[in-house]
Image (cartoon, rainbow, N blue to C red):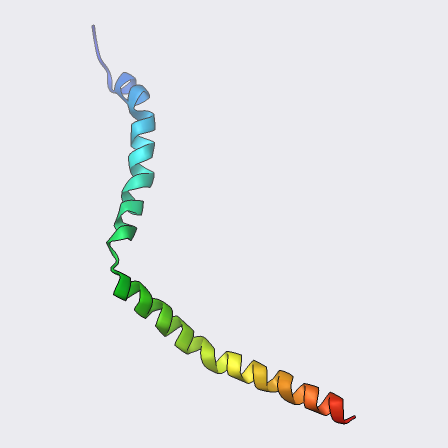
Length: 68
């Protein structure tokens, strides 16, 4: 009985695909809770000026509409 690489790969294709997609996903769980919270906090800090500007624009637009 001669075993070739082709027959070995045919039986292990599912295992290889599983490991290719599972191995990178396991690395995502390494991040600590403080690290995730700091990433979210820094992201929110960069959005706050934009949100404040948009809110002020809407507020003053409504004031002008109310006065007219």
